[in-house]
Image (cartoon, helix red, strand yellow):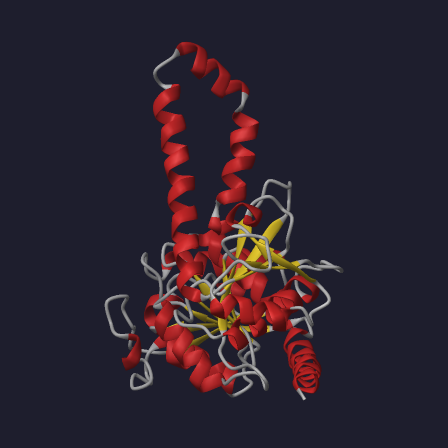
Length: 337
């Protein structure tokens, strides 16, 4: 049975949606939850029937969104520090937090450590595609704003391992985000990364922005600067389209009728673009599992983040990443000799 450490105090809306999401997850899956935070706040929200499935770990400090991520290492009584330490000390298999993402990332990297062969961890997130039920995994979306070619190569390996081991896609396709499909396109870093990624059998070459959403690839590789802009832009576009549709529907009785008839379609669309459906973004490359959830996560998002942590921990992904990186880096080295 998996043991999941959950930062119960992180998030924009306090402990309520985090605890509710944990309870919903326990109703659907069997695992042990370690809720980390202020004991008096947490215990008042946990029904007695969950006493065997939940353990409360006292932490009287909370790292707020306005605090500097660099302070996280000093604040050893904070809920996120203690939650990460549970994974470091093998008392938990994974940590889930909707709190300060920078603090979570820094602590997970420095306290849990990296997988052997990984230069830098990457944050990966699922993006909806036009293909029903299919997502593309984009990494990095914010952990590294200045990436080298080697880092992009490692992101490709980690992304492929994730969609294969965790999402169950047997033959994933990996693409390198560039300004054109031709091998001549890209900057110096992506061109060098292309040469390295060619050693990955699943690599299909350069892709453009539209390919992220058309379902043609399973993994999209980019640096954190580009990836974070992509992520925020996509969220903004989805929100804007929703507002435009609602605004224009109200202007016409015919449009209102059409909207009523299209309710099922709109419901499916909303589900596809809702971050709560997948819960959070795994920090790839650490020697454990950390799921970074949106600060505005509701109970459903927290529940799905926990499920993602369980699926990740039940897989052999970290071992596979280490072995594949070693094999491919040896091949790349021998090619240069």
